[in-house]
Length: 320
Image 1 (cartoon, rainbow, N blue to C red):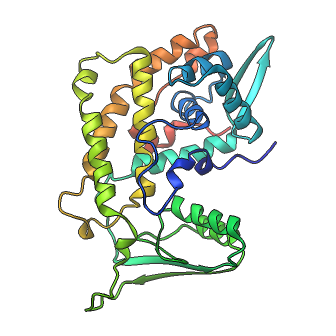
Image 2: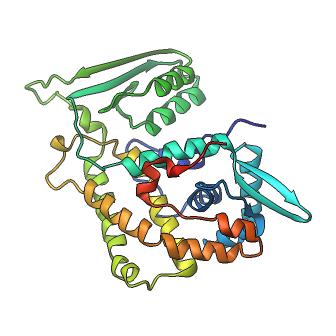
Image 3: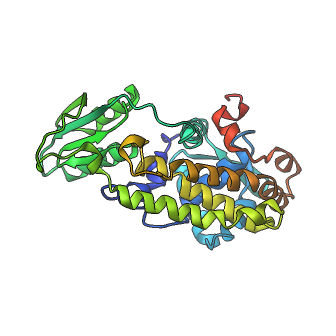
């Protein structure tokens, strides 16, 4: 079996540009939608989802049957999904490796902005030098750094307010064909206009506006959710869209130090809105997915939505 296709590449629209906003406010590629849907309703119990049900769910997002089948096929070839066949009917679920990676990613989303940051005043600087002709490898390294919360302060100098994990450092070294240096240090402010703070590697105003747009968009739904007026396919679409949008925040705002941000930084408010919508729609969305998969009674019973709090605890999932 092929190695799992990196989840960061499936969700590649997060990774373009220097701290730019995502290209789409909502929605994702058919592959990204497929992974989000399967993870949201089958990850806890390793449930198999019939191909007909998955194609029907993707159809609710405007994905044609042909595009849905192509996305499923590509994810299977790349080791993200595995299949089984019973008679004329096929079903799919996440591979063990993809499920484990998504659990880690889900924890990062659920844990994001839970508490105010306890920043130690140090920055991680990643400097590298690679031959100009090795464009593909340079881009691969930049994508890796972006995915891990870094931004370019200067050409060849990337920065993050957080330490990089040993695994991420090893991956960065593997992606570099030239020289790479990683330093954890404090910024020494200079009393001159030439001084550039590391936080200037991010477009803080654009990030704040993205937060505010998210808050405005999803706060409008909270009364209808509380009243139980969002059901069926509408619940699935809204729940998938709010996750698809919110999961971008850790990559565009890697917990930038609050004390360096403008007053009233909206990170915490955005999380509160996300939890209210995602958790509030869990049961009606779960019920609809079960209805779509009703032809398979065993699958019907194992389909189960999870909450943000449950994502923090690993969903109580028993490893395969």
